[in-house]
Image 1: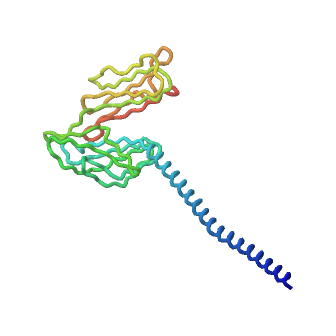
Image 2: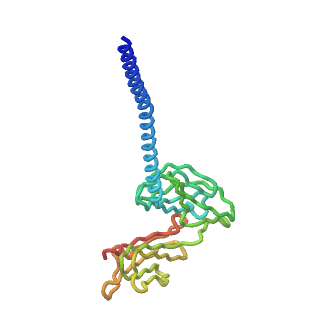
Length: 252
């Protein structure tokens, strides 16, 4: 009987040990597995947030905007802002700044499209300069490429008027000239061979109509690029003081 009792005690202790071990393992798994799942979920959320931030940074860097601020007329107390989206992503204009005064906006501009915003009232003060800036929803700020506007002696003026020419090019020799009926300054001419795109600007003395000629050397002759010569008109102060012209010589 004593031996049987001892065996029963030992068997009971063995069962208790196994049950205790199983309970411990169950508690361990019930604590560790949820913690592991939470950590895994946190890692997934963090990775998603990093990816979203990288996408936003890429989109922000993809914004290419040209903004021009100009008065309605040479004595007006209102400004217009022309916004050209030259990038590959659509942009949303959320604010226009004229010096320290801001104007809320909610204007979408599709890729390669242009919108004219305004008019925006300004407080005119003789001898004062005015800086125009555009803010996008992604946080980019673009200053007016027309430069600072000045109001003096009751009139607006800008430091310069001009025409900016961009020639899309792989390799070639070019001549670029800008002129009107009475004015024909010396233009641009390739020295040797140009590789890559060409950018050239010409200041002009006054608003009005101008002709832009872009020619490429073909064999022994200078041949106009398709779409040129092209006529442009500077309508400052009722429009931008700088005109952009693009000519494509890559497959010509």
